[in-house]
Amino acid sequence: MLVTGGSMGIGLAVAQTLASRDTELVLVARGTESLKRAVDSLEGEGHSWHAFDVSDDDAWSAVQIDELHGLVCAAALMDPVGPIGSYAPADFKRTLDVNVVGTLLAVHHCLPALQAAGGSIVTFGGGGATAPLPRFDAYAASKAAIGRLTENLAIALAPLRINCVAPGFVATRLHEATLAAGAEAAGPDFYERTRRAIEQGGFPAAEAADLVCLLLADPPFSGKLVSAQWDPWRDPTYHERLANEPDLGTLRRIDGMLFERTREAH
Image 1 (cartoon, one colour):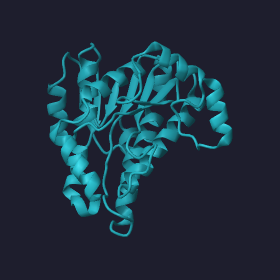
Image 2 (cartoon, helix red, strand yellow):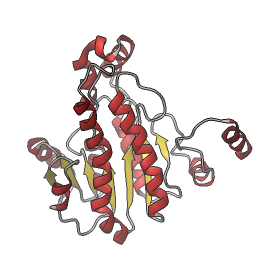
Image 3 (tube, one colour):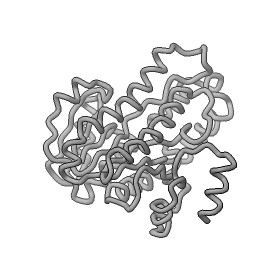
Image 4 (tube, helix red, strand yellow):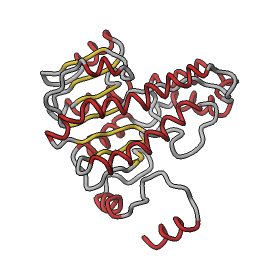
């Protein structure tokens, strides 16, 4: 299986969990030294790594992918932080390139091998995908885009499974962007919540990693956004609901028609 952003944070937690379950892994990230340390931390043998930017199409083209049973798209940026007008538009574009285009390129280049093996794909939504996240415009927009992209691809690529994870507030280096920006740029309330959550350890990365493993194991649903922290994803009856209720676990506009349809489903 291939994990982007696999050298640290949630990506590394996913890689370590998969490796503990006898999975051979390929990690992709930008930093050579962090990739070496990550691979050294994995159980088992046969793991490899590639150091490049996930938004680089040419770099993806140079990677030989022969057999692949799963793809996890965890690479992400969270900056710029601050209200519009306080950051350069180029910084906004950079985050969308990594988070959204990087996800698309990973799927594009891994798709032939995944289809040949009957593999599954997991993307990452989360903060800003389902509710406003002021002062994190690029990150929020990218996560909403990934949620919609995931559902689109689920339709286009069926029967291949692709689902999206909202991991919860996992205390990773990604949130250093918030602390580095400071309370004025990030907003005092969100800054304080972030600082406190990191102090307290945040939501366990292992929970998000376990959810990713479940989604890679060919569940009976596809195109869904599943919250590691708030959804009862370990319950098989919830899997049935995700499979049978088309609007559950998706990004939708709340209106009279959708409300009635959702109420009738219950």
